Length: 331
Image (tube, rainbow, N blue to C red; front, side):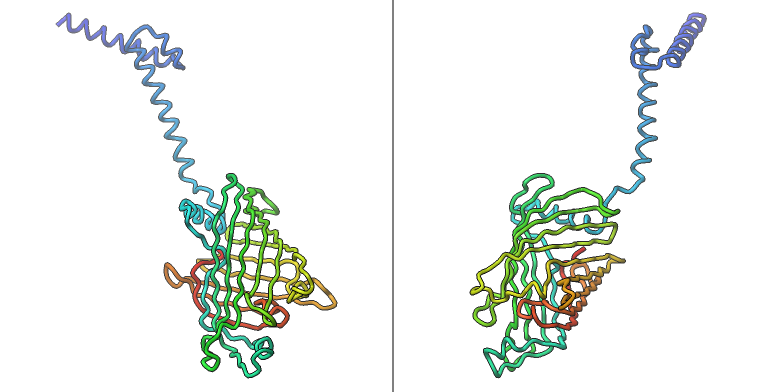
């Protein structure tokens, strides 16, 4: 019994010495200098426990804060980046939509009647747009070379008398450089700067031919669910003999401004442009409203007033209201 009691006292004394060493040891160096094996091990265990406790205290504070996800525009970019993992993938550029019914109170009939005097164009027609882009070259983490294509069509689908012709189709291929700036301007995040070449034409000949080429510089800015996209362009000069629409800039101006806002899954946007000529002022305004219908489609209402809704109508005023569905949106 005495032998057992003595062993117990030695064990208790060892634990006491170990605890004293643990209390006084403040670093791995101190722990390493402890001669007693049990005390040295206890010292290392204490340091490991303190380090783990520190990590446990720190991690939840950071993890309970939501990650900075940016605004609605940045959310769209993140979705697009996933699609870019497929080298053959295409992503939406401008909105893709179908307006089965549009009403234009100022339908432009003259271009058709100049060739087909008996032609009759309806005030009610369909309008749709297809738009996509693809990255040609991932130059760096922030620079990219892109190609894009947009097609708008105005279809006299209800005009049985004229065999439901496409009254106008505009083809718009372009190539541009995109730069992710990661800069701030007046409280907005400058998401992108773009510079590119744009060709737009209606693919027709003779009296119905319309086309022009531009160098377009633009920016994409966002703050929360608000996105702003200003653009400026320069029209490349053409030979007078080949220019079917030499006064295009008098109606389209030299740039435009788009504003889009996401509110409770609904997107409101406006497009405005003006020629900034006080003596003969012309411009255009387009208002858009999209809202969820299901997981794939949105309802879409579009109103356009002014000049240049299409190339064939660039020099006449349009007053159009349309309703339909949208597949991809600005935001």
